[in-house]
Image 1 (cartoon, rainbow, N blue to C red):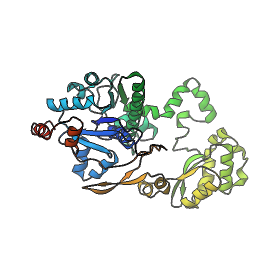
Image 2: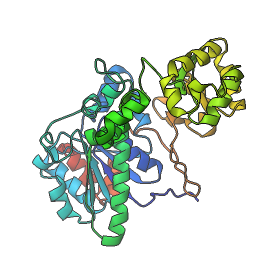
Image 3: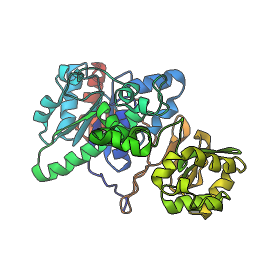
Length: 402
């Protein structure tokens, strides 16, 4: 089967930077027709990458899309957008809150143009609440969603753009839910994604603390520390949930169950500690983690990462090497899963890009093209979708609408 799971779905992508493009990229890889609409000078991420010579990055987020230039500051540009909305399924935007409404092409306007339209918005704080009009970026969402604090990074920027990229994925989920609902009702709806909401939704430690509030002191008394610090305490890490120093790197090792812990002790050459009263159950291992860390650390430091991984696999103890960016690009497992892909750009050449993480047996996602050039498919889209003639398109171009 050559069709993707979303073949036949047309998406108007008005997004910029990371969050929105990640959302529409997932759907483009699944076969949706995604039309990336940019202003005449390009979206913000394109301008930044061109300026810095890093334009190849755009294919990590905008592959499989068609490029259209529309000047939404012009009346005719907005009218063209409305004409496209009439024959599209989804519109996604992540502009400054209220901007689309000010241009009279927001949700309330476009739902009249096409009652079946799914209109998705990604913003820092959503469309309700006291901060709804505030502009935000990834670092702000991670700060206000508690992620920076949870990672011990109150004083420095996050290393991964979770706020943008995870919010983009959640927006995709919302769009697919709305499309399924439309199958029953015949009506579209608004998908409202707050990046702060999404970051808080990932913060399981905060959820646990709130759920356990009535018994917080009792639980902390049993474990010897607050529940929200249990798995993430860098000063006193857990012996059975930790990253250990090997001779040439680091290895993450997990031995949560009693049987896993016993096998770990056997693997590190300490069978004498199987049944040791300090490590007899989960709670005891929490209280005596410092002793356990010393035992495992003394062994791992004498071995290479490969040796540690081999020994843990033989003992059936979950483990994994801590990989940096260069190692990820050579990882056999990622390669086997088709996550280390390449795409050919007619001007920039071959570009390394990630594969799609959503694996479907009957309609697998595919990478078919690199990021489009700015407005690359403008004429094609206007001709094939809106039935405009070459003369009409040239007139629009001369008027600055495209």
